[in-house]
Length: 481
Image 1 (tube, rainbow, N blue to C red):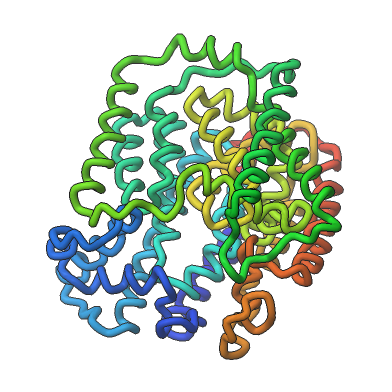
Image 2: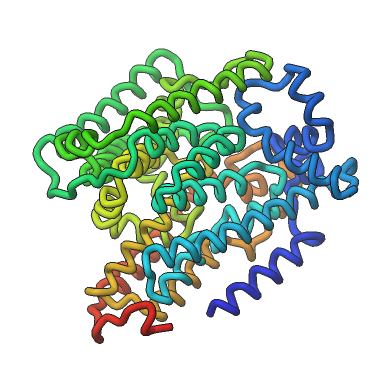
């Protein structure tokens, strides 16, 4: 299976280099991608010294700088649109090769059984961001943030502190929100958090967070905060069900992660030096952004961001689950089914990773799956480790691997054309919906129904596969090899 998977990826990316489908807007550059391509074509020092880039986009500038200077060194002309697209495409594919190497190193660290390696391969590479969007919108910074997220996870579990800090710093200029995810891993360290059954305060705090978020969103909505035009508007008749399931999701996501006494005990082992390094990292990133930007703040505050993503998550019941399942494939559904085990694994890895996973478990209530691209590799690897441990009790074998890989390929929709007609500007109808159905806030009610049915079918299939008892004694990875 490994050879087949690698050959498929080589063929697919080779074909898409010249013949892949590209986004219609700006001749294949898209919206943000047009800015990134322009910066790659211009002198990096000139851009930085011009102070014309906003604070938000300074946090996305690094891939353009790397591509500009690399192509200049190699004498590769990227002044034309097709050539700059090719440069970004090759850069992204090169990063995926690094990701494959990191996957092998992570598997060796955990001593995975052989099938788990291929499940991990499916989790990282057989999904919409890699098989479809990399080619369709190649000048984005998505793959850079994706691979850096995997590298940060690897550095953390291997206790490579210097590597962790360096990768976190780089990621701040590729995927700026990763700063807030990486800081806990840097500052809080690897003190193990005791895994205990949820206590009363775990239930109460999880419910309190969910209800508080609903209350905040309601207050902001009453005061005029609305989503942008074109997003899916919630239906009043199903809004109560959406709210109930919204609260239930946050409650179930946070309950295994909340244990204040255990966190306090683990915090005794926090060292001063990493805390100082984390503070210096934060200050230096903010200083660099402030110095080189035009001082224009980001488009959203934390409060308005929470309000808007809550509104989007109430457009349909559990739209976030449906959107993430369609974006990341069956591994997201496996993560839900094995969530208590994954939470326990995160706690075993350390306080920093526990806080990181808890943060993104909370944010996963948002339905715009692309926003959590940098956190997905960590969740995927923890899910693989949970499956590796589950092999002692359940039948985690090649048949499960084939089934998951098959589902992942289907849900990635690499086989489905997006450009079926000229866009009309109405995101909720076709042909525009062929693109916008890939992102939660813009999934129409019609496509939500279709995707919900597919998600339920996949959940039932995966649950059936994972319930099969192990029929033979467990063999170590060395014996299998």
